[in-house]
Length: 432
Image (cartoon, rainbow, N blue to C red; front, side, top):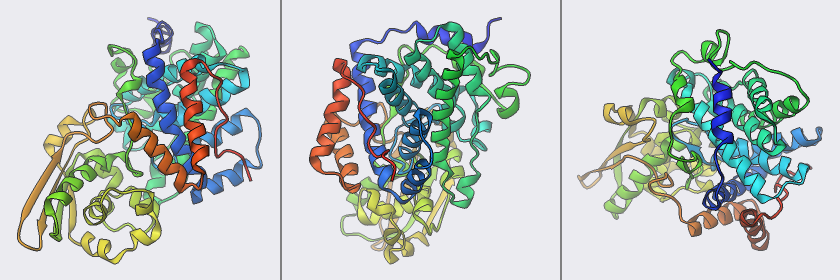
């Protein structure tokens, strides 16, 4: 039987990218722009840029652009695969597109190809893999390789070799989250640059394992105790890119449903004061975001308790809500003593297709309120409008210190890709 990567290659390369698909892909490029701009201005982003100052070349530029776009937790997310495709795929498509002189349509086709491969393989890795490995890193190398293979116009064998070389570089452990370390954006950078390198190796004729996924010593056997190989070729009814969610809040996507529920409760409370808060979610969310008393901005971005408490007291969280003075706020810290979180069987059964949450609040005046969300704002069934998407990018640009005219120019350059305009220079990657 032919390998999964060869059959996946044929499936993806046979897909036609129509104008409606290019419009959809450009929206994700536009959304990614805000993330890379904000990431470049954040403290972690400044450290990444210092590192990149000592490097050079295409791979280094791709690494930096990918890493920066994963710093502020504002990049997109594909629920079923638990991956952030944009932070890996789009930097490869834009930077390699500029390097090769490709036009907008080829860049957007590469984005579609990268999302398709990354999400399909991500869905196949299984929940056991996600408990230890960061899917954006491990599935991401395949997405980066696919985007690069598309732009390099590799033949079928070249694609298979690129995916094989990518698979042997799959890596990214969750231990950083246990220690509040800065490795998460490094995962995105590694996935993007390794995927690019894999396609360049394939173009040079460097062969790689065809059965890198399902082989006796392949990815599934080594890293995936409950792999789901059937997901790789599962019928999707179209491109998988539109299944991807966009984030309205700059924190872990696992907490967004709880934020939406908290916003509903905040409105219902009126002038009421929350006394105790009970949060229910699915186990995978708590594995990553059960942090009852965060003390740093990073911990706050991965704390479902903090996200809900902050939202109840201050409204929709922006980047300022995850700065140190906001985390240390005495009112939020006092409320956190009355916040608890646990897993719920019904929400667990719906995951990963649905990332839901339930929030219950008791108020100082004796009321008991509840709100439930089966999905989050920005999911495919509740997408951000074009105006909301532009406003998100503009807000992130302002936070990063960009002039309005600069942001407007970036948005226009992104939209021009649909008309086959040239790929633009990635903002925020000019090293110090």
